[in-house]
Image (cartoon, rainbow, N blue to C red; front, side):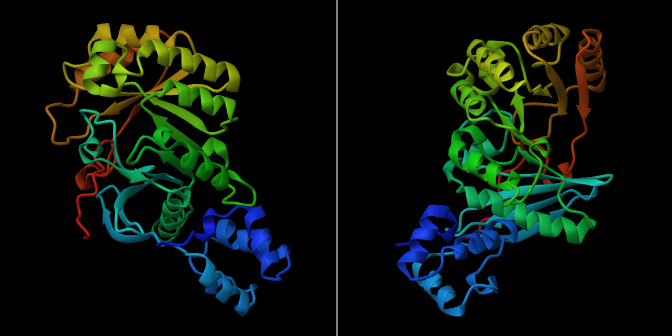
Amino acid sequence: MLIMDIRETSSKQLIAFLQQHNERSFRAKQLQDWLWKKNVTSFEEMINIPKNLQETLKESFSFLQTEICKEVVSFDKTTKFLFRLFDNEQIEGVLIPSHNRVTACISSQVGCPLKCTFCATGTLGLKRQLHFWEIIDQYVLMNRRAEKLFGISISNIVFMGMGEPLMNYDNVFKAINIMTAPDGNGISPSRITLSTVGIPEKIRKLADDGFKANLALSLHTADNDKRTLLIPANQIYTLEELTKALQYYVEKTNQRITIEYLLLNNINDSLEDAKKLCLFCKVFPVKINIIEYNATETQFQSSTPEKKAAFTAYLETKNLIVNVRQSRGKDIAAACGQLVAKTVLR
């Protein structure tokens, strides 16, 4: 049976543990600095912690490891990582360099339960939730690689890897809090984006809990029947309920929502689809990211350049903010919807 990972302990629990072992309580702050600011991976690295206390900590807590076991580089320098977790499960993450910044795409679950028909990750099903420290481990490990590969630290983080972040709410929320805390990784919340297919009660909870990062909705169509075809969870989390939750979120946070729209040939790329998208976006402030479909083992095809141009042009006539995103890392299956952790480590 595994003993508790040291990173699962709160400040109060650490202080109580130290007092129980006749140690001064200020050691708790030192320990947390090592864990969350310096991101060490062993007790031996905590050089201002006495050796006898290091030994006591090793006997009392585990320090479970996440490691990079494979790294693949695209022609455009996008780099995909396969991570091995402490229980030999595996997840993927991606570094995307552009100009003077690097974006890290991070996973929130091992697999994904949603089975979106355009996404390879959904074929895995859900194997388990990631612990908050496994989410942070991805950032820490990829940040070290970013500094070596590109000479700069990670500038932006997107929760667009494997999994639905809001189905692992507590761990994702806690990870983001640590990442953005001054005594943690110190990342600005404006540099972090959480992407979700839209779970109304969890979107409301984000607003109630004072969520400070950016929220992106994987919409892909504003037609309920079509969305259920693409995202089966839409049968439960309908567009009507989703609209109400997003209105609540915007009213409470005063933040603009990002709408992600994957253009699929003859599925959601007509002018009628564009009109429905405009109607959906009328009730709260948005910006729209048009995303290119990345090939997976599905029946879908990317929209033609002509349809993409017409779709985008119509949105712009309605004074909507529209960005057309270029896919990165397609040649190494590192683009949106392609993460599936194919390498078997067992």
